[in-house]
Length: 301
Image (cartoon, rainbow, N blue to C red; front, side, top):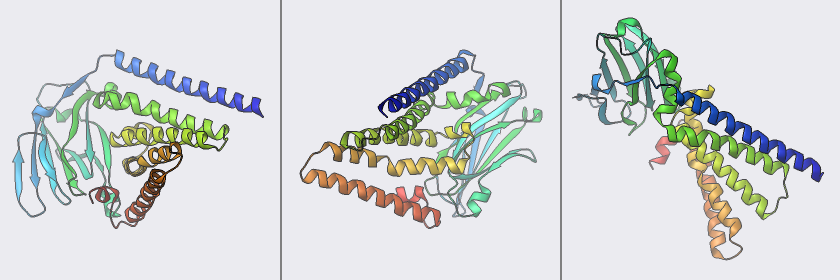
């Protein structure tokens, strides 16, 4: 039995090493190529129509905080000369029903069906190929906020060549990319390892809490940056993943401290805080999926 556990541990160890090695190699290969990105912020202006009927114009992609029902329209007037070969527009949105237009052509859209169900729209990274007529013309991005204090700008607004658009995930936030993805997989591997070596004592539980914290904090980072889209997870799923991590990330820390504290009133306080955190998460989840109060709104309480 002991030999079997050792074999399982070795297998998981080499699996973790393989994951990290592949990730680092892929990152180095991606970054070794010239990054063909062009910031198009200088071509952008914005108009906002607020829910009370007033409006405002801004000479940039920054337009101040918008709330549920406000509609921000970002105009990107591109120059005549091609900025990129097969240009691809990339940007990041949060809590908004979004449409991207080039003249009368709808290039992409997101969130209308989710909002119609009353669900949390969440965040999404857009990678939108532009038609040739976009150069010398205008690309319009329409954002209808679905939550209060939703956003105040379009983030990471860039133009890439189509063949280099994948680099957007790296360039937008290289630190989050480099840290969160391997940490998430390592945390998952560590949790599996703990299950295979379950002694179910205090030290074992502390190991589980550390691994669980690694999974949750990395899921929070990945979700907030829209990185799960790389693995096919839709914007709605990405947001749910992010908020579950946000609400529960404190629990393993509290439980680890509880296990480390051998006796006294503080130990009881730590356990009570952990249970309260779990109860609050359970309540927030019920309210979110019943469409009474979304996760984002609960955090503002």
